[in-house]
Image (cartoon, rainbow, N blue to C red; front, side):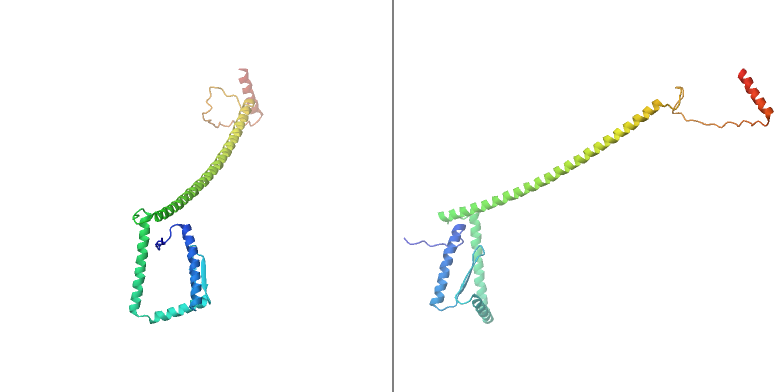
Length: 243
């Protein structure tokens, strides 16, 4: 039983894709070396993996091969005619259309459409790719939720600390107010005691303490001019007292 034909398209499974890359890279390097030896050809090969790793081979020098390629490419474009240029761009357009069709087909398969032409292995690879994609999406979603929770906890801790600081300030102000009230009460008590011990005057209850005090000036008494006037004044006072 012969080996079945392999469909040339991107391998969905990452591990299978890496194994295939390693095998075919080694086979390609081997063929390039054989071609350079058997046919006396100047060969330069440059390969970049999907991870960005470089693999290259040149039987002489990679720099000389690239310079020779650039020189011949410039000469080729200088002598190219319009008809050949049109055919070149037509080929490029056809290639791009083919790539677009392949990408659209892959997109429809990832969304669960047009699966009738796929084999069991293809469906299994597609399922593995979807599971890997779903796992990546869930990891990213969990990471975003974790970051948001951490940020909310940080803001909550800041607000809690601000509340504690405000409570301490309020408590300090309350204590200061209590001390001030205590001092005012003590000063008020001492004033009341001083008034009880040393009353300024005896005021009858029939006087209104809130009534305004009215002062009036009296006429000045005449001063005695001589001894006779003094005796008259004194005699008048003695007579008034005897009555």
